[in-house]
Image (tube, rainbow, N blue to C red):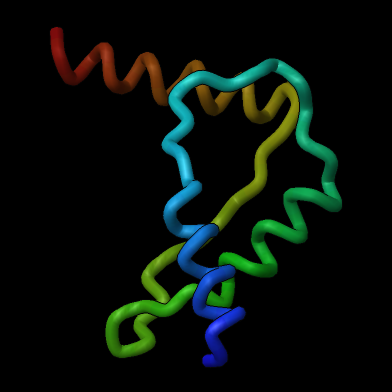
Length: 77
């Protein structure tokens, strides 16, 4: 990597943030596809690629959130 590329990567890593609060604004489908396309290139130990990604929107998302919340509540009662 040349010096300019190293500086760019360094800047990106140093400027990252953890986000724990989100807006209700929907994310554009193309933005999701772009993010997933880049994420698919992330390395994994021994190339196991141990992840699966599902994009759930609309009523199906609401139903899934409800079921997950209920299951968690049931665990701790």
